[in-house]
Image (cartoon, rainbow, N blue to C red):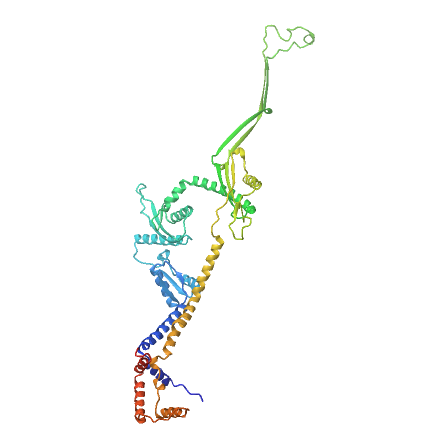
Length: 548
């Protein structure tokens, strides 16, 4: 039948064993137990620490308080970081769901007040207070709208709307100021700045975009930069167009030659001289041979006096007298006019010639190509390679290809230079550097994950195990000296009989009293049991010839 364990007996044995320990071990043993327990608890807590993910950052104090209150009601673990404007929750998988849940409750509000300021009806409000409320509402709505832009983190809007006056000369214009906090690494373009100014101006009655001032959190005036760029808009556009033309030529050359020589073996640069002047010319020419009748006019007129008739009868009809019909002394009047006008249309040609802007005037092309790198004859594998230029035939082909690719025109004044020179080779390849970095990251991640386990193993084998062995191993003071000394007369008599039984040992009578010797041995045994440390020191003194 198995023997049942008695907890009280075990505790009594442990207490008795602890009491018998030396003073040093009595001090070290509790410290070792406490340190081990604390270390294990710390490592366990560190390994089991929950992961937190940022729920909101850059919150206003009112919004932060509302978020914390909502998290407490839903019993979600959270921690407040920084100056209280950042709140993180655990587990991270609930971040998106919780954001949607809080958004349905209107949390956070963004720290600004919009048109919801008019939700609560107040009696006894003056017109001035209503006007101030309206301006606050417009400012809040504009801040929310501007903050929704991707590059803008937060925004502050201040609107000044003067009182209306019946006198036009005394009337003041409305103005507005906008302060923007951009996200890290973000930058606003001039179109975006102009868009924000128009947005603010369109939301306030009587506000012109020119009266909107926009600055960043560092005090830099953004609207002035936009105005300066707008003044130089034409030149900036021309420069951008020229750079685009040059980049297109460079890309065309490099993509073509890299297929032949390999990536990183070609460098091309192009300078394009463009003519941005604009002129128009109109020419009109006439063709005399191409005549066409356009209009024709013909007029004929005739006038004359009336003549008298002859005497009726045969005589007047048969006579040849000249004065018969026209008596002497009469003057008859006659008139005739003929007019003819003919207009011809001569054919003509009108030519209008307009030269577009950005016409290419001249190209300057420079191309650098790398050569070949081969091992010298008889050199071992892994030796440094030497540079060998390309053959002249290959260089001529490359030059011809580049000319055809860019549309080279010598009459236009284009220039082309193709050079074959060795490129700089870095000591370490970029791919090797990236592989080394990836290996280092893998090693660091592995150490970070295996570190706690390795720490526990080393802590056990290096500290705990030697200390436990030191505690359970008896010292010289703990050796039971009674086992080394005879305990009574029986052992002495047995030893004497054994000695007597040996051959060649003469019999002799003991010269001392055995009873007295037994009492002395018993006294010595008692003294050794009561003072084992002193007995051990005494034995060490005997064995070392008087040296401890």
